Image (cartoon, rainbow, N blue to C red):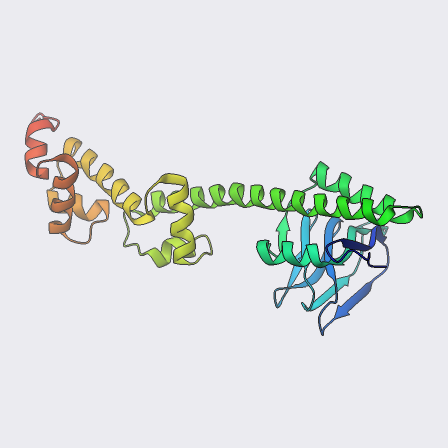
Length: 276
């Protein structure tokens, strides 16, 4: 039952489930409450932002009121023994004006893999335990616990986002390192991590304080400098090997970086090859 205080949030249901038989849940017209679900064992399928996705252990799902919700659980049998491998999850349903305000301000993703965060699981267990009790001031206690739970989820998700952002930025960097000698576009770079151009650029700048294309030029110039200094290749060949699309562009960028044209740089600092 929702508490009389309009600013208080109410825990309608909280528990831990272990499923050993197939079942499905469908709210195709949308939920009338907030739903939190953390996958602990096994996998299932769920509707996430309009797409059916496989939910794995550590995945946190959050649905707001009016969002459609569909879940399909189908426990599998272990190879050889045929023993049923259970599917388990923590589950929480809540409502209230504080939750409405919190959700409108944060708009957290529908799915985030938070792993098995000890603080989140401890709070979930505490809320489930308190919900089973029948005693005075219980709604007030659950209100405080639920607010703490939501704010903790927010911190955990933000930390996961930062970690994932750095990992993705390094993935983009590695792609550039491996392909800088080829014709590259921002579309190709961002697509290597499955991101939009704006998202890829934002993550890369946050991690390395420069744009992906600026870093690509850095890689090409470093490669070109080594070839200018330690090879007998013509400067036109050096430009092509390093990934520059024109000799004029190569010369302009080289001069901007090193202060003198590549030919003069070779004459001044290059390795002197013995004629044989």
